[in-house]
Picture 1 (cartoon, rainbow, N blue to C red):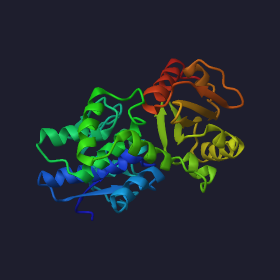
Picture 2 (cartoon, helix red, strand yellow; picture 1 turned 60 degrees about the vertical axis):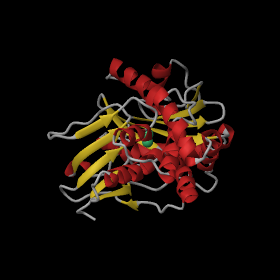
Picture 3 (cartoon, rainbow, N blue to C red; picture 1 turned 90 degrees about the vertical axis):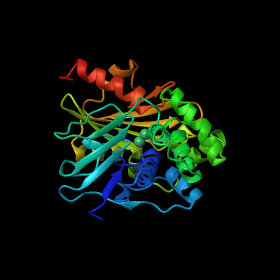
Picture 4 (cartoon, rainbow, N blue to C red; picture 1 turned 90 degrees about the horizontal axis):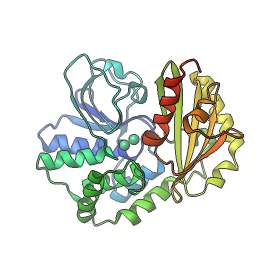
Length: 313
Ligand code: MN
Ligand code: MN
């Protein structure tokens, strides 16, 4: 396996990270590069399982560290903190992404990132540019990831490019994003058999900025109350993580996919940064962020602004 170029998304992989690796492998092969292999960097979540089961696809192999000099392609991320443990030992050949750039390589690299709602929208364009046919399975994977990242085109991260891709992908896949996408999202909200620790790690990202280390974790739900009735257990799991990982603060966001709001729990020594970031009081470690659903566009930027404004916080 070490001889193959490994393609993978971020840790705590979401539907975009898993399916973009599979689709990128397909595109590389179609373009004549057989020496590639899509892998995953963590447990597959229930939403992604729903998609893979629907298509009868196997889960990609799990890879947590790589050999020195391993050639890799990153999809749906570029920050080392979100990649495999020893990414600095790898040789990154390509990045295909839609996040803000935090990548520096002392060598030449193919770097493609666009300000669109989903990595799969970038991949869709790459298929078009290279005149590669998008088959039904690939279209379903692309459609699923766009539905996931944009909450069925309702998130403010949604762009015209995403909508345009969806139009064609619906035709090829024979699926309607508003039914298939909602079924998929709902499959992902089932946390009935999860421990609080598992829930906070479904989709958790580590950030480092202004000498602060913090996590923003996000979980989709159709019922905020079902989560917050267990607030004390979540706080315990979060506080353990803060201690274990030496974090300055932690934001856990439960995002209501029906009403497009997020209710957060914020903990840690620097948790007050959240009040500054969003301009709202945090009461009992919680706050309701109205019309906020996107970590990338609506949670992270105000927190970074608040941190930059006061590094001594
Ligand atoms: Mn992602
Ligand atoms: Mn994504």
